[in-house]
Amino acid sequence: MALNRTETAKRFLAKEIEKLSEQERQVVERFIHRGRIARNVAHEFEEQLTAGQRVADRIAEIIGSWRRLRLTPSGIG
Image (cartoon, rainbow, N blue to C red; front, side, top):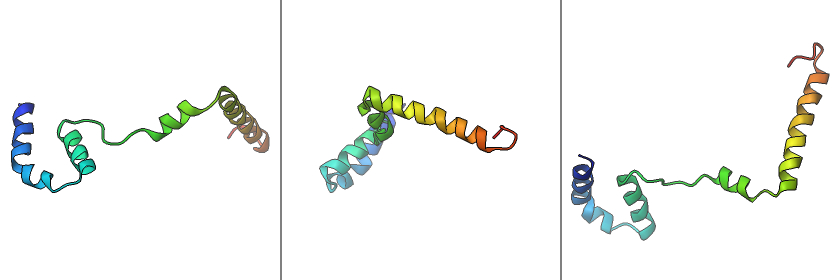
C-alpha cells in the first residue's frame, strides 16, 4: 500500500518536482518516504559540550534550585 502511494505521488508531482531546486527536491523526497526533514540542533549542541561545561550546567541547576528554596517563605516553591 505504501509503495502505491509513493509511486502515485511521484507520478502526479514529477513535473512540479523537476522545477524545484536540489535542496527542495531532497525535502520532498524525504517527506514522501517519511524521512527526517529537520535535524535536532539541541541534541547536536549538547553533544559538543565539554565535560567541564556539563558539570558547570549541573551545578548551576542545583544552586538555582537551592536559591529558590531559600527565597520562598515556606521553603516550598
